[in-house]
Length: 77
Image (cartoon, rainbow, N blue to C red; front, side, top):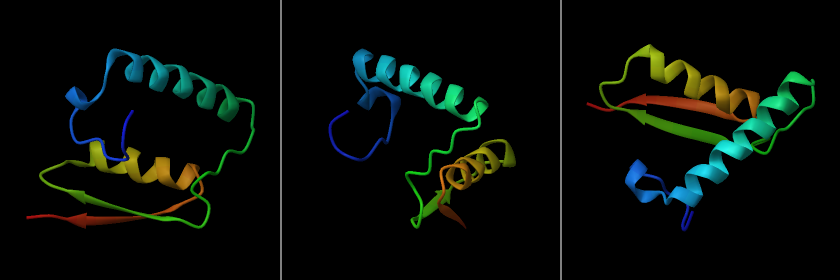
């Protein structure tokens, strides 16, 4: 994936999607095996949610925590 921003799924190529799914499988296996993976250790990640319910907000914030970071959630009106 070129660049650091993903604004829409259309920004991804088919190859990007395959790489993301493969990497997510690797990370899930690590998590199940009890291996620590904290690439966000010491980082603070901010999220701006527009009309998003808890079904989206909570998993995003939890994922940042699992990866070692601190999450900030801001409501955007």
